[in-house]
Each structure stands twice: as C-alpha cells, then as structure tokens.
Image (cartoon, rainbow, N blue to C red; front, top):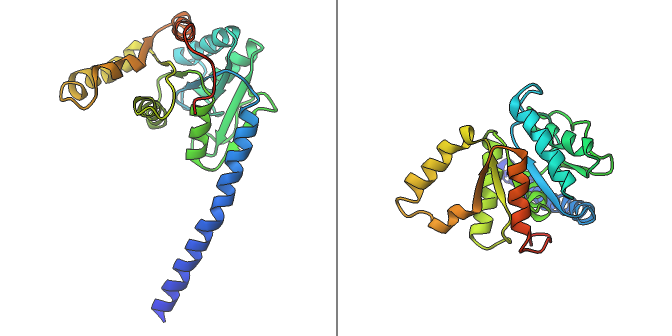
Length: 228
C-alpha cells in the first residue's frame, strides 16, 4: 500500500512539472514582448537592504540619473534598496524605468518609481535573469549580497564562454569590491583557473561620471542590440 501511495505521489509531481512548462513559457513570452519594445537599457544591481540615507543609495540615484540622461533606460529587480534608488534616479531624470519583480523575503512589493507599463512580475529566477542579460547593454553592480554576486558572476561566465556578446560590467565602490578583485587576481588567476584577459571584463568605478564614461567608451565601437 505504501509503495502504491509513493508511486501515486511521484506521478503527481511529474505531472505538475510538465504543466509548469506552460507557465515558464508564458513568463518568457510576456518578458520578451515587453522588453524588446523598450530599447537600450543598463541594469543596476545591489542590496535590497540598503537604506535611503546610505551613501550607496544616494550614489545609485545619481548613477541612474546620469545613465538615463545619456540615453539609456534603467532596469532593476524592482524592489527596495539599491533597486529603488536605480528606478528613482531614472524617474527623476525622465528616463525609462523598468522593474523585473520577484517575491522574496526582503522584497515584498515593487517600488513606486517604476514606469506603470514597465513593471514585470516573475515567479522563476532563471526567467528573470534571462531578461536582465538579454536586454541590458551594461551591468552596474553596487554593493550587495548573494543575489548581487549571482547576477555578477553569471554575466561574467556567459561573456567568458561566448554565450552572449560582451557588454561593460562596472563594480561601483572600490572599498567594497577591491577585496574580491584582489582574490580573483591573486588566487583564481594565480592558479590558472581564469585567463588574464577575463579581468578585462570588469571595471571599477566610484562616481557616476566614471560609470557613464565606461559605458560610452565601450559603445563607441559596438552596436547596441539584445545580447542573444
């Protein structure tokens, strides 16, 4: 009897997995249709826990403003903290403000600075991450936690393996990121786990002007387009 019950339960799980394909397809179709109409954008990542009075929140606003003034839309994860600051800067500059929302413990709702027609909701992390990579012409990575590192290293890996075209990846905040960069250079590179040219994928900046300069310098010789 137990064996029959176990078998029945397993079959129900397999059926549910099969039907999930349609929900996943729906998220991809909706994301592709909405994002493809927006135009060139830069994604801003960082901690959802960063408070409004923190220096990196204020710097994220300034960066988003200047990037928007340079002609790019701003994409964030749609939540609070650095994401809110990114959308806020875009909104204040009169630029395109996109939020790719997902329900997380520290992100209970989308922030109020996202354009009403450019707020997308996702249940699946991997679908949401595809949208970030496919429709971003650059990643601006502010101080953050595991999720921020996940987005950073996935983008580096996809570029390194030629799965997507190159785009600028800018780490903002020398005091926060220098230790990680030193470890990459002195440990990963030293033992041969990456190539010296892989380090060229990452830029370090401390001001909004430096961020815009990196993006502008890159696209002087490249065409703006989705990344795969």
